[in-house]
Image (cartoon, rainbow, N blue to C red; front, side, top):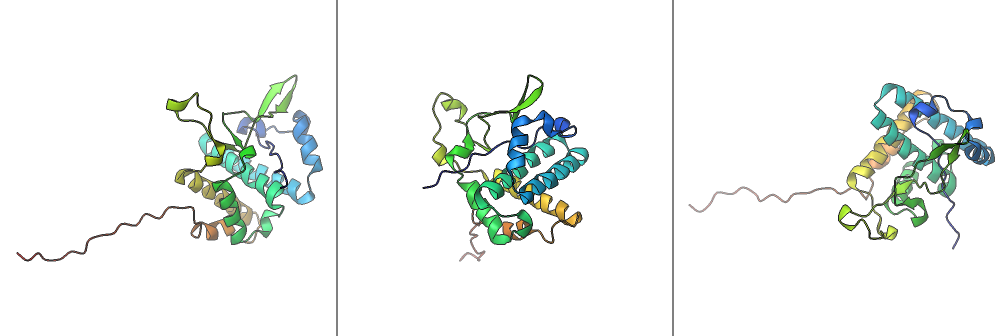
Length: 206
């Protein structure tokens, strides 16, 4: 079985992204230069989208969108190997399946920073991972079984919200013709649909 490619951090915090230069990120610069043209283009698209988000939304929204879009691009680069402007509904559903059960090598167990400023440069952190799974506080000393990772409904919703917003931005910039994530969301099997069986109202014998 082929090994899963190792993910790498792409986007720093908003204040650092505003002044981003590859010369300040030596490891990321090496990775970027080895990417295909369409992959470099997608990083540039995402950078502009995140700068737009940082200017117009809250810091919390920027961080949430940064996490989700970075994860989405890494999957499209390293796993799916297909440009996102060629995605259809089935591609997005494949991504949702991936997020539902990612490889354990993509799951971290702590809040690792993407980059650390050291010796005049932002160094990529080896222990950073796109997904995170921590043991409950009551089991803080217990090692987590990453094979049991499953995103919450809130996390899954956040993933779709960010990707849908990204596609809406790209459509507005005339870089994409449609929004496959918007179409795929209603068909995602991992969303729990709450159904309530209601007793029909009947008159009693009395």
